[in-house]
Image 1 (cartoon, one colour):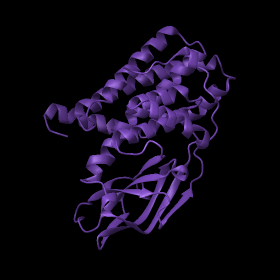
Image 2: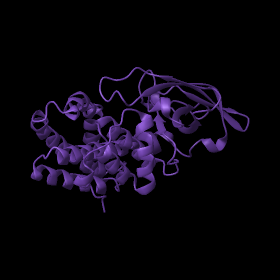
Image 3: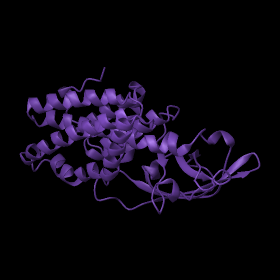
Image 4: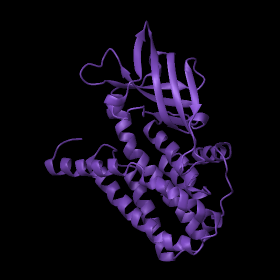
Length: 308
């Protein structure tokens, strides 16, 4: 059952910084164990898209890494100077006796300046041959050998900070490396998991704004049905073709509902939320090409009967 999104809570408290947002999200995570509920409630109480996104992102990480502590801001750190494909990942892990050494750099670490636990994708140098072997390492923000540098604010959702990370002979014990193929088990599924939870959070934010600004009841009903659908999709395996196809359909429906809001926002053009929405809606277009390719490949697998 999804959490109630009551009109009585439609007036969100202003939130200007991570320091304002994080205690609110942490309280939600303690009350709602299911990550998709954390995303939906976090989006509903957000006063802007940026904090809805931040709650959806943190919820997605808890869905992918169930053991991630609820009281620490986390980030999955994959992207480097050349991108985020296995070939683009140059950060490396090398054996150092019983431990490991991490060297390299990451960029666009979401909430990075305020993060306290990073899941870092890096090459296992000994295991990498013709194909990069990627592992995921848990790195504490206070670890020796880690430098965190705040990146310039983005044009949309500028409240959500990003960081560049540099690793120089950062020592890790064996138990800080997650088992298995880091790219197949974590990086690749996260793209799907993140889309589900961030989409739910942003749509839930619009649900609250719709209640606050008295948008049409029929629109709110259709949005409610879509949130329920996303709640079900969140329970589906993130690597399955059926999940990707269902998610593509849900996001297409969501895009249609969002397009309808343009007229609603124009009716409240001087409202601060309308001005922020005009700035921040570009967030929803990020990685559109990757989503289309994911859907295309899902249909190909489904028609061929091949496994993920």
